[in-house]
Amino acid sequence: MLSVLIPIYNYDCRRLINSLSAQAENLDVEYEILAFDDGSSLFLEENREVKNLPHVVYRELGKNIGRSAIRNLLADEAHYPYLVFMDCDMQVVSDSYLKNYLDQIGNAQVMCGGHIYCRKEDLSRDRFLHWAYGMKRESKIKGNKRAFLSGNFFIEKNIFEKVRFDGKIWNYGHEDTLFGIELMKNNIAVLYVDNPLLHQGLNTNKEFLEKTKNSLKNLFLIYMNLLSEKDAQNIRLIATYEKLKKMRMTGVIRVLGSALKPIIERNLNSRYPSMFLFDFYKLAYFCSVLHSERKV
Image (cartoon, rainbow, N blue to C red; front, top):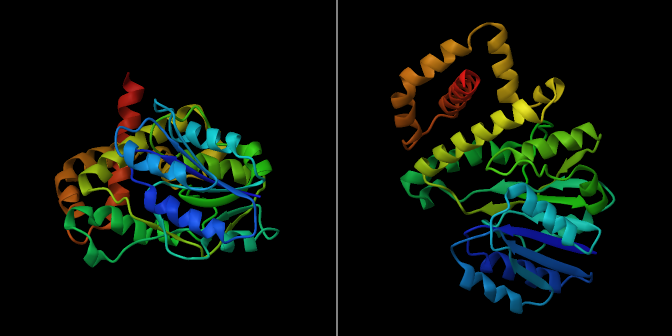
């Protein structure tokens, strides 16, 4: 009945999978947990321990195939009609996590359970930016039809087969954005339910800024190659960029972003990072990427 699907990359997933296994064993349903490692170099020995758990299939791919392809592969290998996807750096916080999704079957074909985060006091200062972004943005996604997070969601397998993750997206970033757009285009509603996982794998400020830049480069490729003009308007950053372009303001934003970069990065590395400044930082960087790529 239920396939739990976990793409793994350089993270110790034993606690997560043990928690899910214990829950699933107490449910009166057929289930499987598929945990596929996508070319990791870390925690391989540790994660192999989960092979001993009932109904767990652990596989190492040997080489990295990318965030979209690994999710498609997991769905292809799943035997049951209901799929639950989660990122490998999540932790279960409710003893009824799986049951909560099963109880909603019939109410929606796609459900997002959301993320929660630890207390700020429990973090080192060099991880405040990722925490602030998660708390102020990812935790408040409910009701935003333009947003979709792939870190914790339920989907009927027949629906997944209609949309799938775009295999052409290999690098980090915005594969879930495109997946959400495909759901919208197919008139598939997403139900946001209170069934969160704890996001534990918070990056350092430096790592998070670098990942943000990589995701914006990926968004540029998506924008240039995979999105129609109409679909692009469903992504807030691109919609803002298009408005600025019509006003001939992208160059101003790019130059201003470059001039203010040291000041903005100082704030983003502080105890109280501003999401307004982070949004501007991303917009300016996106303008810079488009300017440099179009000059080539």
